Every structure is written in structure tokens, then in C-alpha cells.
Image 1 (cartoon, helix red, strand yellow):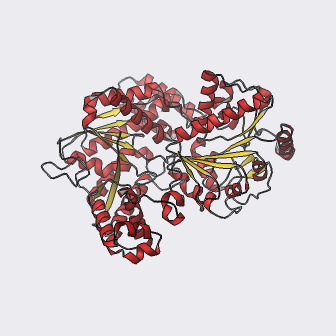
Image 2: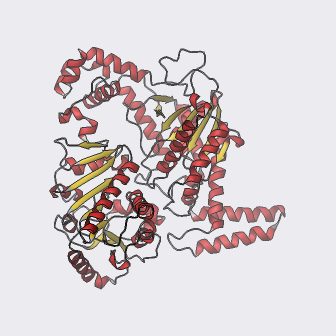
Image 3: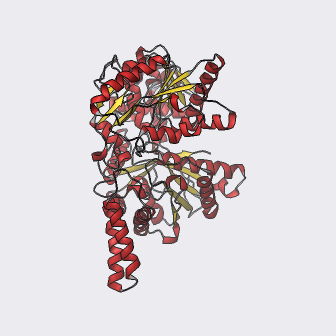
Length: 638
């Protein structure tokens, strides 16, 4: 845990190594408050949020109730918001969300739960909102308010333009908010245009406020909220006015804060004995001044807050040479290690060669999207490459694709006179279900299976294109994902054991895993946790093969590693970038328009190429060799 108190931050901020530790800590803080109020024979009034951010928090509260006897008998809750209109039983309903994650698993009295009603007639909304405010006051006010934050800086559904004194009301949702919610509703066209939300003024009246944020995708707005001026264009900045507010982050969400990214500018102590820290400062300075590293001068360091570094290291020249060499040594055209070569300044070992390589892909296309060039090069250079597709990816297939494939099977059976009736019957059932399917309705088991087979076939095609034998493509179908819904189950023991079993079967000398934690629904985060926990258990059990295995983390679809973090940079030539694109195109169901594009509306191949070219340009501008593209990796030391 790291508590920041730098002058640049106007809100106390606590950074934890990961969202797991942060969520558990906040849950225990809430539990202590509940117990304190119970000892005082008083109600504990909580303001609650929804979305993916607080789910682990709620899971820990449920655990505390079920395993440690935490009672919710004295708890009264008020939720921040609800879509309008919205039936409580709908998949996207916050009523349903709260029941599934918290209320159905604890002993809170039903009458103590308050959630904005998405079924109120339009003409009755104003009165409902007025009464909601009264109920909060009747309960004695909110003791502790939990918040998340949206990309626009909204808290609750208080969109840009919401004032500091705004109250509970009906609001029209911002286009960005609706775009971000599109995945939950299987298309932006299905997202309600309005919502009922507590106002900023209502939120600010809570005795204590804790705002949670996870992942790189929240880093920019967190910086704006905590370091920028108060403005209604970023409603979260009004939290700066509150006397008892705390922002709780994981490392990724806090990455852009001045005290984390450039602590020398905040006047904070810096460890100039740490080579990684020096590399971070030097690359920042070079990019800030748009100069190659080797052209930085003493004056550049002195005038940009790095005089202490200069004083400790002697002169710019020695710093520049050291950092330049470190970056140069990250570049390799041999991601699996170059045989019969001096590997003392290479990111990967020369031996053993060839290596058994296992690439974990959270969805059936992350492998080629995020590290397709490296994937192709590993195969070309003779390594035994395996790919583990951790989830089926079935919810990311459009309904019309399922109909098209079901129709193909029926027509195929008819053309070759195999067994017409069962295939025709299946086709009719699929068409009937999908034509009558409500927005957001969970697919039938048959439809889920067809969509999963579509993505499996695409993954096999991409593997064959890359030169990977069919038997080296492993489809794990981790159970946490197989809900048929955007909302997944928590990572379970079966998920971890399946990962352990595959690792023991292949016994890889090199593992690649998705370290990109900014995907909209957290699938990458859960898949990475499964790998981490599996490897840690194998290490504790003394698995001998693990002693000779290195783990590399890739990004690319949503985010890229900062240049100072990169430990292996694999150059991609124009021809290899074209081959990578063709491998991505094998995933035809994701082509043209992905069902879940996230905040970036471009196709995945466009995002990937832009990131690869941008990384190459950064290396070039720092004075290193110029390439068409670069894929970047960070090693995980377990």
C-alpha cells in the first residue's frame, strides 16, 4: 500500500498493488463501521455503487458475513443510480446487480434497501426523486458513500455539466457513457438514454466518501480529478471540497498521478540508485523535450526537475549512455532466444533452443491481435508453440453470424444427404430463438455453443496460418466465463486447476500472458489471475520444470507498456505486420465491427497496428533503430 500526500494531489489517495488488496481493505473498513454503529445501537447507512469496480468489495463483504459472522441487520443502503426505464428483473438492472452480488447473500432486512426505481412513470419521477432525498435524511444521512468513476469524470450518473449542488434527478446520459455501457446491453442502440441518479450535492453530504478505480483506462481521469481544478465538466473534481474523502486505486489506475509518474516534479524523494527509476526519468525527459537520449544535456536535467539525479550521477553523458544501452538491449529479433549467441545483453536466454512456448490468449483472438508478430516469429524460428484460449469468447458473436452458420450446417447436410432433419430442426430452433430474443437476453445453450464453435474455428484457422498444428491449440473454456452474459462469475478453483493441468501437460520453457488490464469487462484481469495463481501454486509444490520457465506479459489491444517498463521489444517488419493483419482477419466474426469495441471504435487490427507503430516511433525518437512496428513485453518474476 502506498499513501500519496504530494502537494499536486488535492484528494488523499491510497494506492494498492492490485484491486484485490484494495477491495479487501475497503470491505474491512466498511465492516468495522458496521460493527461500530451496531455497538452504538445505531444504523449504518451506506451509499452503494454498481459496475465492475465494486464487485470484489461486495464479495468480501459477503465472505465476512458468511464466514466471520458480520451482520447487516443494522445496515441501511441507498444506491447511487439506475437506468430509466429499467425493469428490476432485467439483466442490466442495478436492482438485480445488487441482489446477485450482495443483498441475496447477507442478512440485510429487505425494507432497509433503497435503489432508484426504473419503473416509475415518467410523470412521477420528480416526486420519486424528492422522496428519495427525504428517505436519506430520515435515515440520518449517509455514513459512507462508495463511488466509482466514469471516463467522463462522472460519479453516479452525474454527467459533465452537473453542478456541485445538484440533487437526485432524472438525467440524460452522455454519448461516451452510453458507448461505454454498450457492451452490457449488446449494442449502443439498446442502452437507455436516461437514468435516475443521486446528485453531486447529495453525494457530498455523506459523512465519508471512498472512490474506487482500477486499471490503466481510469488513470487519466483520476489524474484530472485529483490534480485538476474543480469544474462541472468533470463532476468528480467536486470531491475536492469534501473533508473526509479518499481515493483508492490499484497501481495501474494511479500510474498518471504526478507523484507516481514524475515524483521529481512534485518535490518528492527519488531513489536514484534504482536503475529502472533512472530509466523512467531519462526517457520522460527525452520525450518531454523531443530529443534523442544521447543528446540530453546537463542543462536539460537541471531545468526539468532532475538536478538531484545529475548531482548523484555526475554528468548527463554517463546517464544517457547507460539508459540508451539498457533500451537497446531490450530489442531482439529472437523472442525465444538466439541459439549459439552471447545472451548476456539479450532479454531472453539462448538455451534451451528450441523452446516449448505456451501463449495464453484470454479471448480467441488476443494472441494474434496483441503479439501476432512475435507469435509468427516464434513459429518461424522453430519453437514448439502452443496456444491456450482461456475463454470461448461466445458472447462477442453477433446473432446473425450464429444464424448463418446454423443455416450452413442445414444446407450442408441437405447437399450431401447426411442427416437432414436434425440439422434442419436445429436451424429452425436457432432462428426462432434469435428472432424473438429480447435485447440483452441470455442466449440459449445451443446458440452459445454455436457462437463458441464459430470463434474456435476462427482461432484454429489463425493457428494454421501461423504454422501451429491443430493439436497445439488448446481450448480451455474456463468456467468463470461461461455464463452467456457480459457479467461473469468470480474466478474459481476449477479455473485455476484447469490452468495448472495444462501447464503440467506442456511444461513450457516460455509463457506469454495478457498483462493488459484495461479490457472493459475484466476478462483479461481474471485470466491473468488464473495464470498467476496457478504458477504460484506450482512453485510452492516444487514443480521442477518451472525453474526453467520465464513468463512474459504482453499488451496491445487496449493499452501498451510505457517505454521505460519494456524489457523485451520485438521489431516487426512491414511484411510481418501484413502477416499479422492476415492472422487477425482469420477472426471474421470480429471483423468490420466488434460486438464489444470498448471506448475505441476502430477495428482491433487498426488499434494493434497503431500501437505497434507508435512504440516503434518512440524508440526511434529516443535515438534507437527505426522499425515499422514493435511488440513489447514485460517479464513477470514469480
